[in-house]
Amino acid sequence: MGRRLDSFPVGRFHRRLALLVGLGLFCDSFDNTLSAGVLASMLDSGFSTLGLNSLFLSVTFAGLAVGAAFAGWLGDRVGRAFAFQFSLALFGLLALCAVLAPSMEVLIVLRGLMSVGLGAEYVICYGMITEFIPPYRRGRYLGLLGVFGGVGVSMSSILGWVVIPTLTWRGMFVVGGVFALGSWWLRRGLPESPQWLEARGRHEEAEAVVRMIECENGIEDKKGGPAPVAHHATSAAEEKAEWVPITVLFSRPVIRRTLMALILTVTCLFGSYVVTGWMPTFFVEQGMTVSKSLGFNAAIMSGYVAGPLVCMFVVDRIGRRTSIMAFGVLSAVFAGLYPFMTSPVLVIVVGFILVATVASFLTLGLGTTPEFFPTAFRFRGGGFSQTVGRVGLIFSPFIVLWLFNSSGVLGVILTVCGMYVAVTLLNGLAGVDTSRDALEEIATEGGTVADVPSAATPAAPRATTPPIS
Image 1: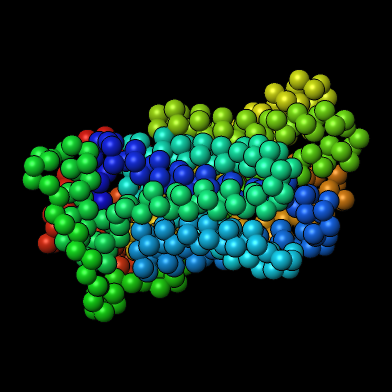
Image 2: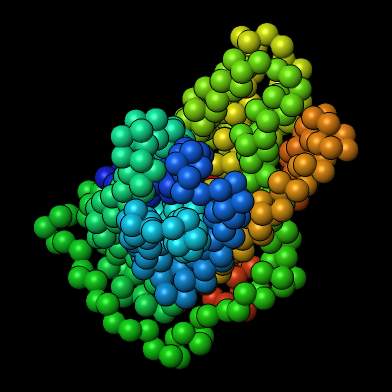
């Protein structure tokens, strides 16, 4: 089944899927980054305090970590389609509930629950692209997801400037909730992943979904039409035969992939957090002018879109692993250069390139880790990696402050540069094979038949365009 999906030319179905998945990531990025304007407004109005604002941020980080783990389990156990819709509905509904929060304490509780949905959406969006988009075009659509995320970050800042003065901070949660629920409604008809259905023993349903994709893309005669999808329950025998425990991530055939996914995810999240969240603070501490801080913010807004946009046109040409290594090196170089820029023009230009490369590395880092794992535990592999990475973000402010107080800006920058260089070298040396043959092999060794073509359903011929890893 996987080989058939990989052999399809990109068509109408793939573009529709990418648009609807991108809308989800847009909403996720928008809600995840509205904190700056919202918290400042609540502090100014007396609704909150600095201590409660800090708790709000800590609860957000914790919820993102829980959501990533929850999405991995839900996506592998119940199905991609259900997890896909549940996560978006969860934070959309809770965002509207947050509008009516009578106190900051209640809002913090709602934010924690909302962040579970936010964290889940990151895992599911990248996983959906991995399972539906053919490898020879996957880099382009991962870049497109990054563009949607970057636009979400930008729109959160722009709308905050317009909405908060007129509708207070509550208006931002209205906008976020309406966006999320609107996207949920638009993508309610997306099908279940055929690879997941086949891994659960539901071969007829998987075949029906593939035929539907063929029909929508014009691959087969539309008069025949796709077979109807029967939503029958999976038998207990099938569940027991196909379900593998999460400990498979630490088994001998898989452990190298799990460690590489962890290192890649932790680096891309921590690096992005330091570059976009702490650099302006460092400049202020060093006595730099406000204009340079504003230049940095302008670079963030444009770089978060420009970087993934470059990915769309570059990654499929040179390969995803090569692209990750290239952007890792560029991130290390420009992160090392940026603190030494003194000219306002260079602050903006170098800052723009830095944020673009960091955003590209983040997009590819989060987007390629699901490829490391077979279908049966793909979402749990990606979810576990993001959970560890987001738990790391909870402690990262203390790590950054310790580095800053002990070694200054240079110590922080060298640490970030060292992480990018290390993960680039490890990625090159480890050489994790993401081809379907490799995934079939570790699926079999790991005790599951996931991703292995069924005897009842002959494997489709290989794609004419070789997969790019």
